[in-house]
Image 1 (cartoon, rainbow, N blue to C red):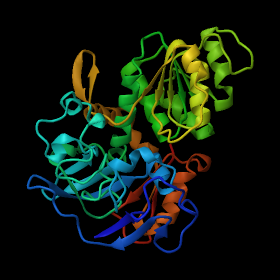
Image 2: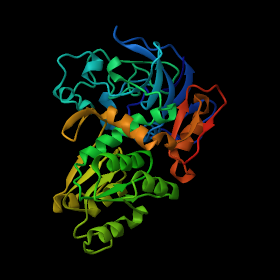
Image 3: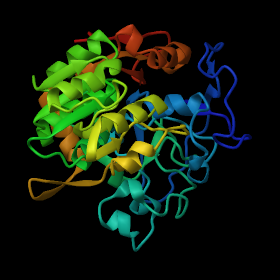
Image 4: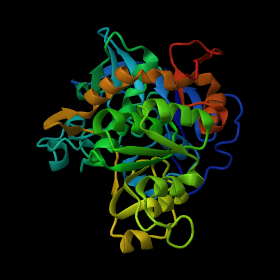
Length: 402
């Protein structure tokens, strides 16, 4: 099988930057990624199945991993060499088209009884990510035993697979996994009907969070800080016309106008602020901005993977803010009913036609072009970039941006 394999197995994960990781590579190599013909992974158990990826997205966490910017926190829950790719739509041997729920929790690992987190439907908080019949790996795409979506063949546990409705094309299906992250983030924010909610960042995750907030939470007003014109256009549409759009530098001013709060000191210091702020970037600057524009007693939700950042946490303390993370998915409580996050994500993708966010796809052989495009998506007017495992070498498929 053909696969882009992450070959950094002789260096401790996250210990140092990979020289030139996000600079153009040569041939079928890009930083620590190398395109190779390798053996198919063995089935970890009799209940596991083989799947053949059709499209596999490139996520911000993938870019951070390839660039060597991921936190060393992940070292015990990643195994090498691994094949990236956790946003996957694939074919099964029995003719089904499925999307992958990549978290490798207790059920996939053959652990019984399952841990309290898995029993409660919080798969992302599984306590056995390095145990059971699989090597360490928080998700498919970071585990040496499962393979990943950036390949022509991989393995999955049946509990990870969700059938794709016929009305969803592959571009829509590949958006389901990131949409599930956004749904979990929107519901983790515990938004009330009259709340003012700020969203920082309008890349793929930010735009999907805006769509999820509009469908499942319906805030009183929504402020979206987006760098680029096309991101603001998408945010306005996906927010259902309930959005105030601004440049990230203008976020404090936009929140002040909406909430009627007063300026305290410099322009980014407010006496009040948004009820909830959702940070979909995860940089030191975005976290500092989130803490600064959220009212005392408000809630800050970190959705973008922060890595190692240096941030002044004084406002967290002085304003008694609630700072929470939103990772992965499992089950959610919606309108008094408990539902699987992926089912909600499938509904969201279909209702808002989120396959439109897939800007371009590339074959594995064009790894340099694909990764460079993904890393510069915002400035190039793009949103989601994916690998196309259906296409032959040397081809690419570009989609309309709107």
